[in-house]
Amino acid sequence: MTNKALSIFNQLRPVTVGFDNVFDHFERMFDDEFFRLPTASNFPPYNIVKTGKNTYDVELAVAGFGKDDIEVQYEDNMLTVKSKKVERTEDKDADGDIIHRGISKRFFSKSFTIADDVEVKGAELKDGLLKVSMERIIPEGKKAKTIDIK
Image 1 (cartoon, rainbow, N blue to C red):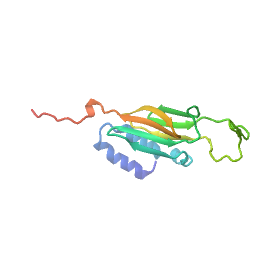
Image 2 (cartoon, rainbow, N blue to C red; image 1 turned 60 degrees about the vertical axis):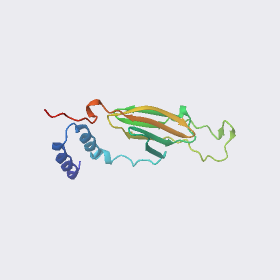
Image 3 (cartoon, rainbow, N blue to C red; image 1 turned 120 degrees about the horizontal axis):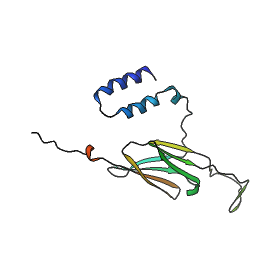
Image 4 (cartoon, rainbow, N blue to C red; image 1 turned 90 degrees about the vertical axis):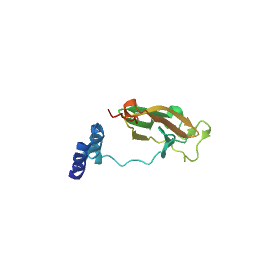
């Protein structure tokens, strides 16, 4: 970890309560192993949309993929969408000989870090767009309230 990043986290820890896991996550990001990973792929293109006060959708453009070709996993605050390995048939398709293959079914894996209080509700594939819906669940203890003074 860089000394600059370490000093920022050390300055913030004394003035926060309950954010240790956030700081630990950022420290792992600045770890040397993080920077050795290959650069992130831009495939498939995606949007992150806030659909309501506490609801979100992650939309991925996956034209050419069917429901059986894609896997959506959620574990340890990490949402991962990936394609399943596709066995390539030579130059045949269900409709006949392929003259040009412009719609690729290449392997992809895209991961998103999800906050502790966000729950993944489901996924839907429609018209080449995979939509993973999420909702932020606010516990009663975190909702705004007025404290009476005695």
